[in-house]
Image (tube, rainbow, N blue to C red):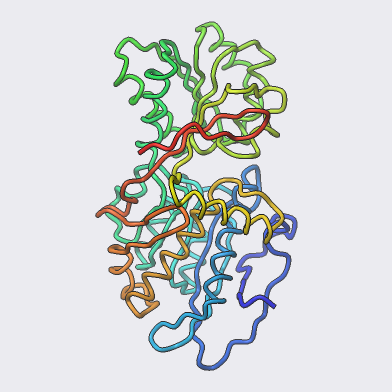
Length: 389
């Protein structure tokens, strides 16, 4: 039996977690062992469940590794316990499960996945003094609230969106773009930064803006409006479950343009969701994070180990979830305590060599020197363009 304690702290449908873990491991706890409870929150149901499963798997793998190492804190052997919650990418559900984890007296939280759930939940963790590391929330507002408990291990939307904007103007040489966002904290934020980044490099850039939702399926009206503007690039601020069908409808309506977006569309699921709407080299997307040099071998080893453990490919954020868990555990070891108030100062000053690179936070809780990776798709497969800072 694996030396991991997994607690399903909510009554999640078994279907929603079938790709993560199918049972609750009831490993006996010895008297001299100390239980450290880590909360993990992601959408385990709904249109973004594949992201949630990916994140959850990264957390499971990290906890399994920690428990296999048999680390000690405060002179006691530690058994890490994972409490998994489903926020369904919904802000109200996100705050509800955040309070549930606070009531469960977790020692720390890994999550949430979306900016729209991470930001409102962060105030609850802050009030309780519980450290929170998001592996994927990229809206700058998350770390601009003055909460000393909030951290993230990926670059934010300002870096991501502006990099894509510069790329559109400097590399693709576009003069006319259309921007669609899904009105979520993530979608609106990354789209806004894309426009700022592009306009900073081209004062005469023409921008047509349209809006949708994160649950929309019909884009005929907004795409017809956009087509009349003859854009060279359509930038979408949102996730792949909307971006994929949008690509299909772009082809059906004859909108011949490059399709750009942030890490929300930069997944292995996008070709499946877009079908024949995805052409080679049509998409340019940026993923928060990225490795070069020797770290490429570490990342490849993680990807292979993940595949062997779960019989699934890494979608996007699993390596960052893994590093977030390991970073939090490293801070506890450095402080020789799992009590939030005692290890929080160590977390703020941590220097952790992770799978995704060196993890060190600035005074706001943002990762220092965050990298971005630009990708395209060829033959239905993601292909790296470059890693940039």
